[in-house]
Image (tube, rainbow, N blue to C red):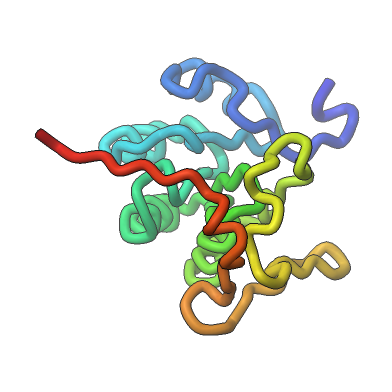
Length: 169
């Protein structure tokens, strides 16, 4: 049915830890199966890529622990000939990290996961940036090119934010 209706990809069709089940779906369909957004361990990524559980890898920069580890996963995917379309669930820094990542890797997928959920769904993201850093024109995103990540966090947003400090004992 997905193929009949022109769906281009099927994201995480099975529980993310069930790589064998996901592989069955990948093998059965002629559309791209994507996954990995919740995986944070490099050995799991190696296994997922080696067994071709998905057609497109979707690491999440924040879930995976930063750019260095995400670049490693993208590299593993590139070595296997798999495109990388990272997961980014909201219009916070994760989307900016993802945009910069896509601009830096050779196996960038053809999409940017760009959240359409607004302040009703993610109220905390409202007013986060001094100026809106996202520019989508004719279906293409522009990567901010200013200092750092190309954005400034709004001081008023920071003043209203809740802070929590965690310490190891």
